Amino acid sequence: MTPLVDGALACAYLSTPWAGRPVEQYRTAGALLVIGVVLPGVTVPVDSCAGATERPDPESLQDRRTERPDRGRVPGRLSFAL
Image (tube, rainbow, N blue to C red; front, side, top):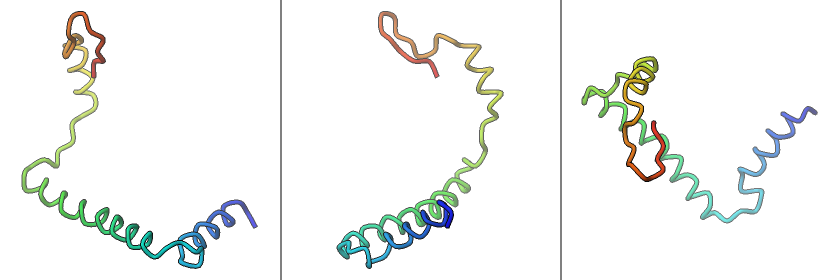
């Protein structure tokens, strides 16, 4: 078998109750998976209604950065410009 198949089989085995993990860990993992599926399902429609679906153009972000290179800096302190 290839390493990819071996890894897939090991992951499949370790993600089942046969690996001897407590049931509580599966409940926690299930809850986190549900949150991971539900959260984008709520966020996308809310952002769509709010008009927040437009993504900024990376080129315009670069232009803005070069126009104001001192933005956010405090004299006498180390800071990182975005």
